[in-house]
Length: 168
Image (cartoon, rainbow, N blue to C red; front, side):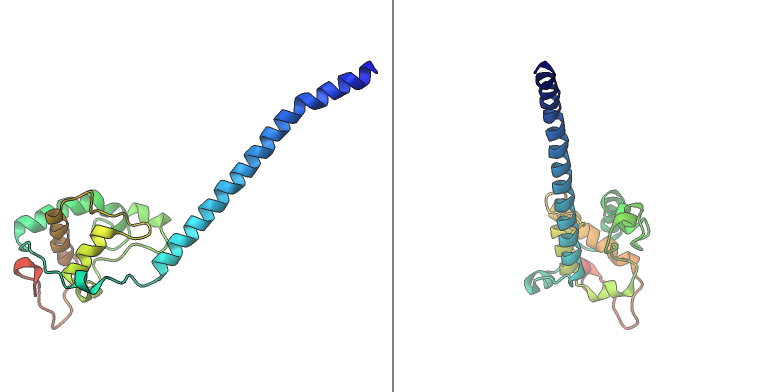
């Protein structure tokens, strides 16, 4: 009888440890499942075209694209954007390796298909892995970023360069 009680005590003393390991395994699986769901959610969002509300796309840049604005935009770009989009804007920054889809290539002539308002809205709201900068930078700084972005992409033939206020 003493042996049975001793054996029962040993079994009972290991049960909490086994339950703890089982609990950790369940928690690990739950965290993994949530991570996968979030990853696919971000991928699904990013796989869709990034539509900008028409009202936002029509916004005019109130900040002249002068040397001072472009210099400020470059300073902000190097602080906040270069890690993903790259120092030269090609979408090949060090953090881009882990991102899918890859960050936009700001040197692409397709950048000229975007209005200043569209770029400003995208910078402000973010999407997927791209953070929102609405609370990070004041309005004027986000327009400076737009002015700097315009310097990275070559003009398509027949496209005017934005002048005062970013307007072509």
